[in-house]
Image (cartoon, rainbow, N blue to C red; front, side, top):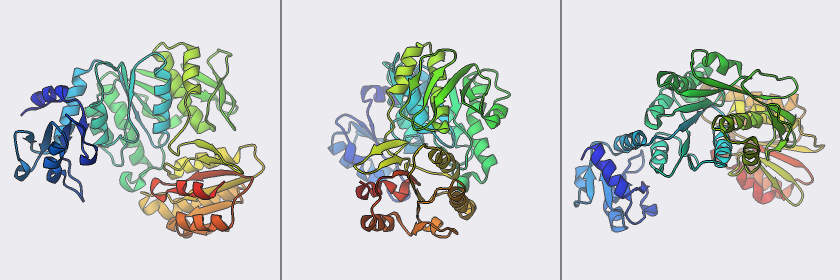
Amino acid sequence: MNIAQLHALYLQHPTICTDTRKVSNGCLFFALKGNKYNANQFANEAINNGAAYAIIDEKEYEISQKTILVNNVLETLQQLATFHRDTLKIPVIAIVGSNGKTSTKELITSVLKQKFNVLATPGNFNNHIGLPLTILQITKEHDIAVIEMGANHVGENAFLCEIARPNYGVITNNGKDHLEGFGSMEGVALSNSELYYYLLKNKGIAFVNANDEWLMRMSKQLQNKITYSANFEGRNGSAKITCYARTLQPTIKFYINNNGEVVTANLSGDYNFDNIAVAVAMGIHFKIKLNSIGKGIEEYFPKNNRSEIIKKQFNTIYMDAYNANPSSVEVALKSFAAMPFAFKTVILGDMFELGKYAEKEHQNMVDLCKHLNLKNVYLCGENYQKTRNNFHTFQSTNDCKEYLKLNPLKNTNVFMKGSRSMRLEDLLEVIN
């Protein structure tokens, strides 16, 4: 069976499943393999649970006409997604970058939904498996797709672009993420620039932050670009589309170009203002009215431990613990330090995938807390335990949790940030 034939079958059974626990009646089950699992073994179970067909790549599990044997299941899934993308004549917006990809995706989606039927990457389905699954959720009813791309080595964004075929793209920033895989900041920039190269090669349009000198240099060769800027006192990038801040803390209030109507976002900090500005620029480009763009921004509420504000009985928590790297922690700490609160507490969890940079970057975060005069600081994880500091330091998040049970926080504003596997959200149980 070739890809065109498989796509015809997919159109009859447009639900894709890769997990036997989530098989739905009539779906196509793709038996993916990983380091610790081989879903070929569960093809028969998937069919018994209602899957119309199971796509497998090991002949010994070919049990009936309902199994389709291919050379490589993952490659077949990716080829099917590419074939499907080529049948869709809608704009696809790709988002790459070190920090803020998901928030930017959600903000853009909230703005575009004011006028269009939008398909956006669900959750963190942004890698070589999640992205094709996202593309295969696009139907003819959708007007626009907003696709997040996550990479941890050079070449991955280029590969993902070949599947998603974006017409539009934005790099949020170049930061110190996945340094273990990228090797250096130059590696990070090279990976992100793969989106610009794809757009250049295919006559797409890039949205470029005029306040980011690195991105402006990287985009110099682009023939089609739209510049945007998030301006405030001390930062005044010249761009086609500009947002002007009235306030950045504790919430962002701004207006667009020369429009005097103030928009109030449910976010704080200059780094979130950049994410807002590109969403505004997208809205203007796609001819959405300014009041509808403002409505889209105001309707966005952060969730899933990303820039969430959680009000408890005695404390207010600024929760940004979905992920962390040195660049994102730095800007978030500076933003929190600038908050107009008398009592502040910081809880940091280890940052991962830093390789040889781990020791230096964790010490940098400790030193930054001291420089910002943040005194009530709790550090969780083995990397932070190795730093030179005078703060509360714990081997694990659970150790910090036990300490806070006996020494509860009260009447303070708490900022929390760490890598996903640190599970800092577990501390919410003991912060009231």
